[in-house]
Amino acid sequence: MAPGVSFLGAAREVTGSCFSVDTGEVRFLTDCGMFQGGRKAPLRNRKPFGFDPKSIDFVRACFDLGPIP
Image 1: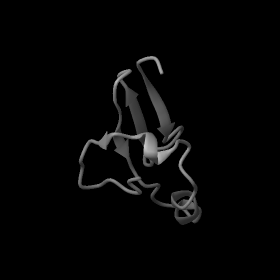
Image 2: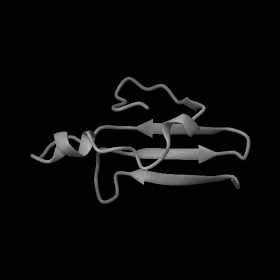
Image 3: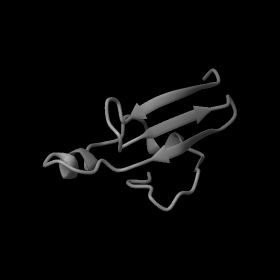
Image 4: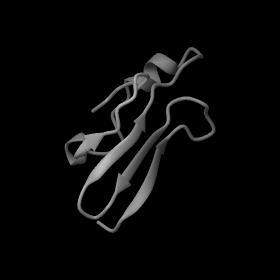
């Protein structure tokens, strides 16, 4: 895969961000936050990831990360 950044969450949201960085050699997440607030947040946090978690080499650590693959 060519190097790049993919925005996988938090479109039109404040929470739920998820960014995937691919260098061509490794792929990592810079965030994988949970959706917060609203009645649908628990359901949205249980949805399958939009990527294969096995394809991630590491995750940038943060104390407020949500559903880390």
